[in-house]
Image (cartoon, rainbow, N blue to C red; front, side):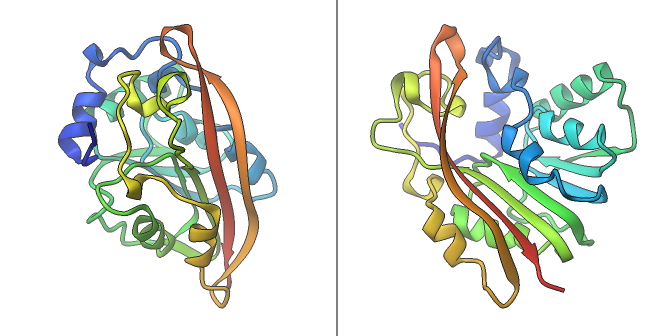
Length: 221
């Protein structure tokens, strides 16, 4: 089956009955590329676009960033807020926002806009263009996306799929060339453009292999 990745889909995905146990997205640690790609950045304002259970937003907040964390699913934000509270973070420096990023407008620019494996209800390249418009001059855009392959089902499937052999629509996969081609060199300086493979624990004790695309770019002043 395929998904539209709309509000109803993600709300169902994050329900407690959806199997969010060990190895699920709800308990995942922060994405490892976040630490590497922000190591040289001074903390400022950050947008976590599609924050899910909040691991990245919490990681940024504990390192001095003032974070706006946005997700379409109320259930995901409830889990994220509980996780932040358990980490001793309440209120600022994290603002949790339930919104559809395909039509939400922040009204401000951010020093960092980051998205990790977001699956919006719009083509990914258009989504990256949209959130890139929210990066302030001199700020950073960090994109971590899935490079789905024809054989990414089963034990190698993305963690969103929940182990049921779901197939992602063509617009849910991205390539390095597509992302970098969409960044106008007159407006952006590309600092990182890489593909990686890594294994993480998955549901049911299986290993999930992720095929990742990582792009970091700085908006020119």
